[in-house]
Amino acid sequence: MTKTALEILELAVRAADDRLAQDIVALDVRNVTPIADYFVVTHARNDKQLDAIVDSIVEAAHKAGLEVKNVEGKDGGKWVLIDLVEVIIHVFHYTERDHYNLEKLWRDAPLVDVSAWVSAQ
Image (cartoon, rainbow, N blue to C red; front, top):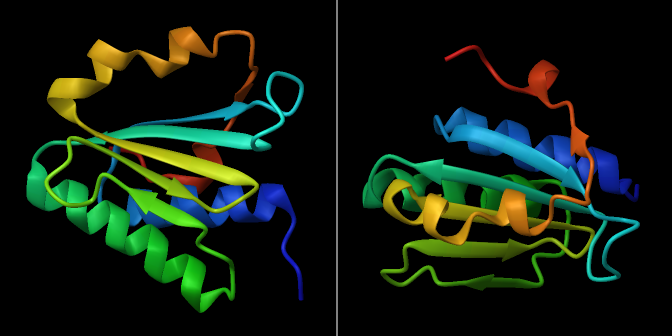
């Protein structure tokens, strides 16, 4: 069964949260860019956690039968991009997130309330 973009978003957010991703933000970019429906921006406290978050999202996508179009920056990167076609996830090392400030760059995109999908930290 094909998943909707919102279901893919939920899967990615839950998988990131499962590995204690920090400050998970989802942006609805459907009316801002043709490259995806949603962006997820989050960060990790260290390199090991960054890898765990990325692995968790990719594994959850594979288990759900989703296409993982690309994973960029995984080899020692401080910013890993996971392309699930309709949803693009940006996982930063905490030292890099503020530098790139994607939330500001894409400020025309409304926020998606993901609070039901994440545990209180």
